[in-house]
Image (cartoon, rainbow, N blue to C red; front, side):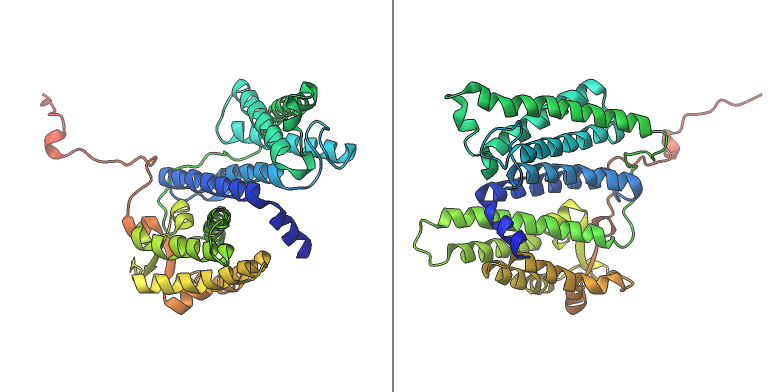
Length: 356
């Protein structure tokens, strides 16, 4: 895991900003979709979750210090690295175009505009953020063509890739199921993948906020600003926030329509705090020791019992006596896009004329 951890640390502030923005986008997007449609299952659910995944891929493309610069400029790794980087941008644009038709049923003109815009922003952001492209945007005054190249390649490559993805979606439409969900009640036990997605959003927002806060604290007299930031953000996001939200939910559980409960009632506050301490304690310790990737072991240990337990209860759920349920099972509020049939009251029914 050493190489992965080194790459993770190299992201720096740009990585923290990118991770925070994409996690916030995923939380807002999935939260709206769950309120509209309830349970996102089957193929439409996978397509819906693919939207933030593609956005996450774009963020990784911008900040990850691998490959060269879009358009072949900057201090990249040579022609091969630059060409591969441009191809990755094209693949991301194809995914945008595919989703544009298959999920949202948008026309080719809108798709080309969106794809070109995404390619332009991604190319310029990578030119500014990635160490592989250092100095590209700064060269604008010295040589306009050097800085115009990634912008032009990003714009045209994004539009071309999105158009190709849109065409693929139109061609395969007759064989694929529909890509947009239908509104259904969110009953039943939430799947393990849905719960892991909620935890992933929580950890991404926590790490991003802690990294930015640590940078702000570096000029103070604190001995270990990084540890203070990690602990402080964990307390606020993992312990305090669930006490004031519906269903004792963190940001990730709010985004995925989940809640904590005990015996079909809202979870007691003390048990929620204990559960948060048992989860965030080891994770904060591993991040403080410079071993962030080993926090995945904490996730694996917690999730292992859920694979065989009939209620999908994880290790921390079994210890605290809590269960992760859907917010619908607690609130009983149907999705906003669900069509509800209500028979008119007796006085609202029109009077029928006598026959004969």
